[in-house]
Each structure stands twice: as C-alpha cells, then as structure tokens.
Image 1 (tube, rainbow, N blue to C red):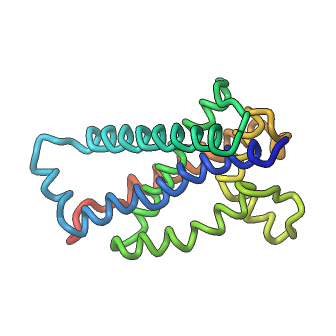
Image 2: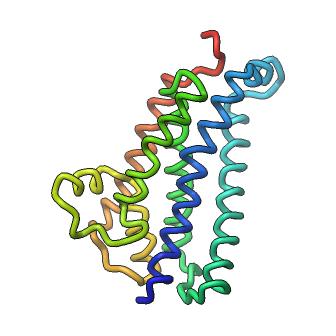
Length: 201
C-alpha cells in the first residue's frame, strides 16, 4: 500500500474530527455566552428542530470537507484509493456522528466557551496521534496503547482503512462499530442531562 493511500483516509477523518471537536462546542458555547441561544427559545424553534438543523449543517460540512480532501489527494498527490464502497460510506457517516456527539459532550461539560476550546485543545493532539491516523500504532508502549484502545478515533480510522482494503483489521468487527456507538450513547446521555442553554442558569 502506498503511503498516500494509507494517509488519505486518516486525513479525511482528521477533518471530521476537528470539525466535531472544535466546531460543535464552539458554535454552541459562543452562542450561549453571547445569549444568542436564549433568543432562539422565545421563537417557535424547538430543541429537536435546532438539533436536526445543527446535525444537517454538521453533516453537510463534513461532506464538503470529504470532497475537497479526496480531490486534493487524488489529483494533487496521486492517491488511488476508492471510497465508493458501502462500508466506507457507513464508516464515514458513523465518524461524522461520533465526532459531533463528542463535540456536544465537551459543550455540556464546559462552563464557558473559552473552557470548551481549552478542553478541545487538550484532547486534540493525543486523540489524533494516538489513533493510527497518520502512522501505525502497533509498536507503541503498553501505557500508550491503553489510550489507543479507549480512543474512538482508533476504531474509526482502522474501520475505514479496512473497508477500503488498505489495512488489516486491528480490532474485531464488533469493536469497530461498538466503541464509536458507545461513545455516541455516552455523549448523548451526558449532554441531555448537563448541557445548559442559558449562560445564567
């Protein structure tokens, strides 16, 4: 496997990850701190509709990122890997939802927008570099592998590469899907209980 074909899936997921880790809590927390969200709730807009619109916007942005990164990889660096596979499409969708949910988790735990961005910055590099996004992580020391196994990005990166045929499976099929779904469930539960819409509450 050429390195560009190995790297391109990781770069695509990096775009999704950064969008979820910084874009989601940033949009919510800065709007809350500026009291924009308070104005939403005096309109007919309901919370489910807000979430639906937010999710559609997030998925659309991920779609645009994917197209641009794929075109850059294909025509700029000569990547030959094809994403036109059902497994790859499902993994990309799972990744977009997982990272969006993780963004809501950060937003629910942070008291201010600055605290949310600080939390995202602390998590950003360890989660990216200890996931196999840019290089194989099989030779890492045991204490770092513990982070790899707890990191949802590790399973999404490996699952995407397996579906594209550029890497062998490092985890069982159940874990490749189950761990991201577990993080989604945890994020939804915490956000539903902890997320505050008004800065004065």
